[in-house]
Image 1 (spheres, rainbow, N blue to C red):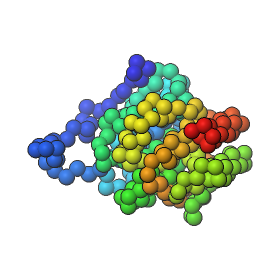
Image 2 (image 1 turned 60 degrees about the horizontal axis):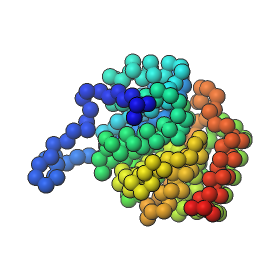
Image 3 (image 1 turned 180 degrees about the horizontal axis):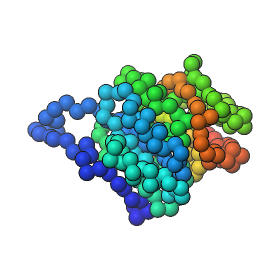
Image 4 (image 1 turned 135 degrees about the vertical axis):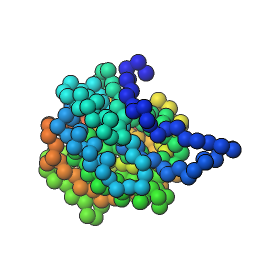
Length: 272
């Protein structure tokens, strides 16, 4: 796409030796792709990337930052540290919002990933803890297709979340649980998730350009609702949400997001 610029280290790990009828010469460990939609995250992005790079997992890690036309020093910081981390940068020339950044991240994963790989999406503002990722991968190894870092699992904690946002997520949880329930899911709105490549590939091929069609923060709810059409196994792990570590103001407009979510709920339940 003309609106997207991609920057990747020359020594990337996308190329694998093959021989015979598609068999690898050496066992290939599934790779972990951590996708970060980022807009004006200069105060958090470097700290978060360091934490992700130090996560104790068996998988090779590739961090993909989708810079959504930041106007601060986010992109400058990313370029400065790129050679020090397994980091790929995808730059939007124009701001496309969370939905656009998520769409780009999904496309990048499906283009460069392999059938056994896993993608984790998380916020770039350092409010989601990368230490949760190993627990998510354990669930994936057990056979889950989608794993959500949930605020409603035993052991979860939220610190510093404004009251109006707490009310929004609580109401969304109960509305979707009643109207469009998904087995194993309690937290519909959290974007900190792990996806198996095969599940993402199947859903993306089915919906095409409509897979990420909602604007704003409700796009993450919509992705989950669309994936419920399939026989995917979904589950959750406990999370620690450190909203007190957020450096800048929230980009979510609570009233607007609430209205978008209600409209989405109506369409998915009564329209399809």
